[in-house]
Amino acid sequence: MRVGINALYLLPGRVGGSEVYLRNLIKWLPRVAPGHEFLLYINRESEGLLGEDGVQVVVCKIRASNRPLRIAYEQAVLPLRARKDRLDALFSAGMTAPFLSPVPSLLMLYDLQHVNQPGNFNRWYLLFLKSIIYMSAKSAHAVLTLSEKSKRDIVKFYSIAPDRVTVTHLASEKSVFRARPPEESTAIRRKYGLPPGFVLYLASSLPHKNYERLLKAFKLVKISRPELKLALAGARDYGQEAIRRKIGELGLDEDVIFLGWLPYEDIPAVYSAAGLFVFPSLHEGFGIPVIEAMASGVPVVCSNIEPLDEVAGEAALFVDPLSVESIAHGMLRVLEDPALRKRLVTEGLKRSAGFSWERTAEQTFKAISDAVAGLK
Image (cartoon, rainbow, N blue to C red; front, side, top):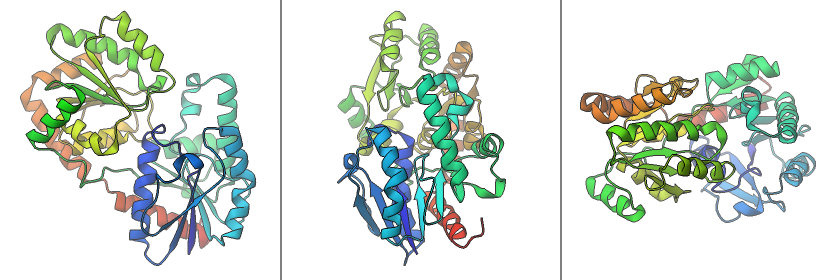
């Protein structure tokens, strides 16, 4: 079977968890489905940055930074490429897909944030998202998503039959995300100017990541822990200036460290060097940083929202992301209660071990095979 993977959406270093997902998927698909062929369609920005043994990279003459042209290419040209390359199936990994595909089309929908939290988008972009993602999902032979919460949303809002939607959880790379020895933690802290016991938040700068409440909560925590520092890592894009303004208003300029987009090889050690990982997001499709932090041996405080409760189980301390006081109280509890910290670390290591990229790839390939066989 020849399977095309549509990665035209990818802007390296700017799409967070969806890039982690894609990189691990193309790594594991050839391993779980030997004897099959995989063609990865990428844009000019990704040229030379993606590729795995067993995957043929096809560079398309389009830039993802020009979203309208990328969508037009995806709709008009990619189906022709699929026919020319004699694909048996086309898997689109980034929320949009050709409406008319000459082969069975599968679509990854990470979440329906544009439906659940429309206020995070301007009017015209919201209209664009609602139309293009809806049509992509309705025309796909099968839809994949990351959590049971997202599956229920897709079934409810898009009226897609449950048996056409497959949940494939994400994971952490076990050989990479693990507790590191003290000398590695010391080295990474020295490299980035991080103090011992810092609090880490790894997320994009988008509004739903809830930075304003986190910063206010951190201000409260510092009343009891004046030495504490907060490190912010992840893509810095829309929302970045608002975050910096709020830091200034709260007088936290000397207490917040901006790490920005970290090289992938440094991220595991940064996790492991943290004293606490906090994740107060208002909306998630899965929440992969939670799993990565747990696998790195760091206690986790996160929002009591779906699907984070599905992901973290009993291995995190949950807080109300709409309450500054709840976020602050949760952080202080973990920082000041050694027994609680130990329990969260132990449970987090167990919980994260239950998620596997190999299983994600197996479930994805089964969905593709079923679509080709006409079972969905």
